[in-house]
Image (cartoon, rainbow, N blue to C red; front, side, top):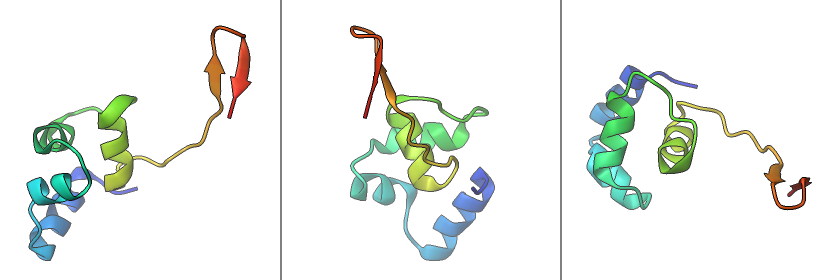
Length: 74
């Protein structure tokens, strides 16, 4: 995992803008900027996916709990 400053530095060195990266990965540029500015690591939704893709979080495959049947699903 990397920190937000390291991610920004990698963008600077690569010459790729954050907005371009967001569009190439089908994310909203505004949401990517929000994730990078936030003091907290996202825990769900698109923000979570962005954090994983950027390397801010590890991707963990946890079975999803089905509340209708009270069983885990894969």
